[in-house]
Image 1 (cartoon, rainbow, N blue to C red):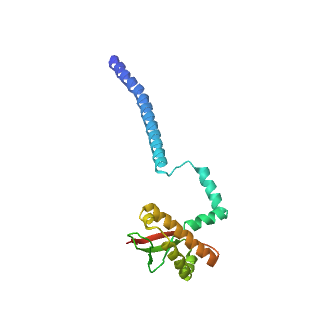
Image 2 (cartoon, rainbow, N blue to C red):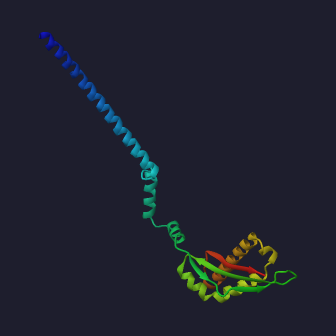
Image 3 (cartoon, one colour):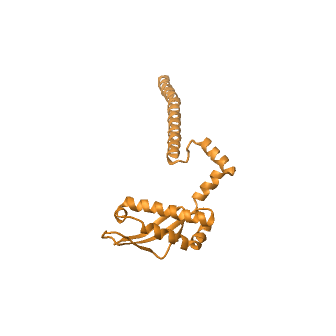
Length: 185
């Protein structure tokens, strides 16, 4: 019987040796799993932009927001919504010369980001329309039939409106011009 006890003891010793080995293996697997989850979560947060790593840039932006300066005011002004002011009725001008195209009809709207300029545009509409009628009448129909010609005319219209507004009010205030209808016949 002593031999049986010895055998049992050997089995118990083997089980005792396997228990620390299995516990250490389990601990290693848990550590690897936690590391994998941590790396995966960090990568996912960086990929989605939650963790950007730009703490210095963010701190500089916060400092810049705390300081009032002209650049910040200009950026706020640029972010203001664009107000559209139609210059109704449509402009109609005749072309002179021996071309097949005899007249131009243009409907346009003026864009400004300064809401106080909207009323000034309406107030000085007759002066603006007068300048634009002369501008439209002096155009070459062959040039206006191309996209580049229309874009050049749009730039000239913007410059003309800004010139009238500057002479009448002291500031141009107009940011853009949009053709909403452009017909040549």
